[in-house]
Amino acid sequence: MIRVLLADDHPVVRTGYRRLLEQAHDIVVVHEAADADGAFAALVAHAPEVLVTDLAMPGGGLELIRRARAHDPALRILVFSMHESEAMVQRALEAGATGYLSKASEPGQLVDAVHALHAGRRYLGEGLERALRGRDPLGESARLASLSEREREVFRLLAQGCSPAECASELGLSAKTVSNHQTVIKEKLGVATSAALAHLAIRHGLVSV
Image (cartoon, rainbow, N blue to C red; front, side, top):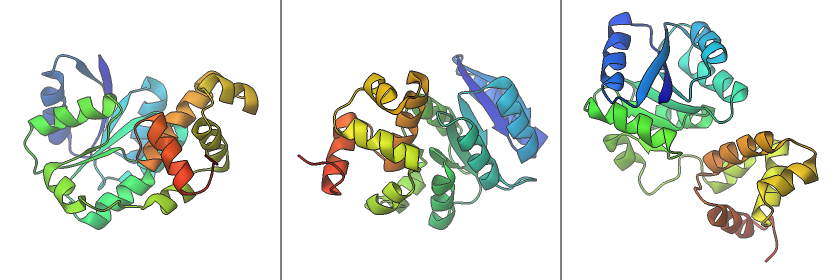
């Protein structure tokens, strides 16, 4: 079962989301929250795999995304919002969201988005995908700059062909910590495979061929 946390300040809306998601039979909503602080507390208490959040809520959706990402780097975060501008999508992705869907979308897209994020893919709603097609919201250089110092260390080792276990040994970290870093690094850089990660590092002169 895919464990989902819902964050939206409208109870009727949350009830609709819950019913829609749980009709999929492989999704369970572990908790609902009406504001950013309540959502973060629920995140700590219930350890969901996917957070579905609005942006316009008490405490701020973007701030919730940042706090949630810092607490659990492997968490998948879907923004479900009425705001559809490219600037807002970019801000959400920069904050750490892994998917963005307009509330004007067909209901089934919410289920599709949760499945996609749980499978490790980024998800942008149909209209948003068209709006952003052909351009990276951040750009490779900016994406690289967004990595923390530790993430850059892990990135370089992975790009050089080290396994996660070898990275853990080299950096004195646990295998789980390296695995979490690897997930966040691929997410921030917009790559899905180790080969793509290595090619990106070579293009920017971070590793030699």
